[in-house]
Structures are given as C-alpha cells and as structure tokens.
Image: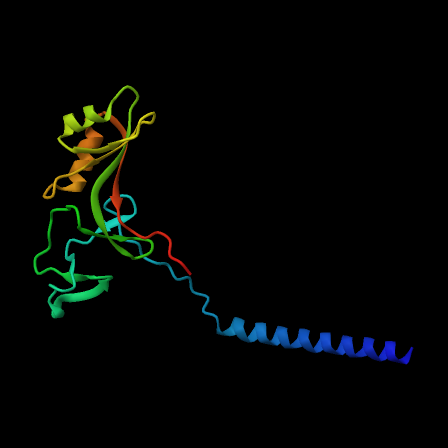
Length: 178
C-alpha cells in the first residue's frame, strides 16, 4: 500500500515538474519568435511557373571562363553573358519562380489537340517539327528549330486555333532523393 502511494506521489510530482518546464520553455520560445510575417516576393513568370534568365547560359565546364562562372550543374556551368540573349531557344535557362531552381528548355512543346485535328495538320500549319504523336489520344509533341524562339512558337500554336493547350518542356528535376 505504501509502495503504491509512494509511486503515485512520484508520478504526480514528475508530471507537475515536466508541465512547468514545458510551459516555461514555450513562454521563452514565444518571446523570441519574430511575429512579423515574411512574404516572399515572386517575380512574374514568362510562361507557366518559369521566368526566362536572358543573362545566363549553360555551357560545358571545360570551356567556361572561370571569372564568369556563377554555379555548376553536373558537368556544365552556369555563366553570366556579357550581352543578354533575347532569343529563347532550346538550351536557354529558366528559373522556377517558386523554388528558384535553374533548368534548361528542351525545345519541345507538348500540345493538346482539338477534336478532329491531327498532329500533322498542326505541324504543317505552324512549320514546327512533329516529334511524336500518341495514337488514340489528342496529345502530340512538336519541337522548334535550333534558332527559333520557343515562346513565339507557343504563341503561334495557341493563335492557330488547332489546339486547346501548349506547354513548353523544361528539363527540371522536380523530385530529389532524400
């Protein structure tokens, strides 16, 4: 009986001490926490959730000048251009406005065709190269030439009236292993 009473008393004291310590700790943390809201300023995207970085280029690390290298991505280096490139072509760098990650554009545009329109019709009407067409669906992939503006090609596709949607393909790693 005495052992039971003693164990109950010790348990009550332990819980009381722990609760007091936690409340004092929470009060101390609450005093130190900055209550101002931090709002991240997002820049306006050029397409989708990407902003074109016209002053940057992705080149092989072996040919990059050491003084112009900003960062490296695998065997490639991100370098600052002396003159910004206004042409958004395959290989141009874009920045994800949410994550801040840089990634190159592939030059492919995925399209959703309207009913009764074939991918060949779209390729012939716009002058883009048909990369692949998925039979039984209204999906196709077209690509631009090496020195053709990807953003203007997307606008041309949308203005043609032959498609419902056009999305530029970005070679970004969306998921990383932890």
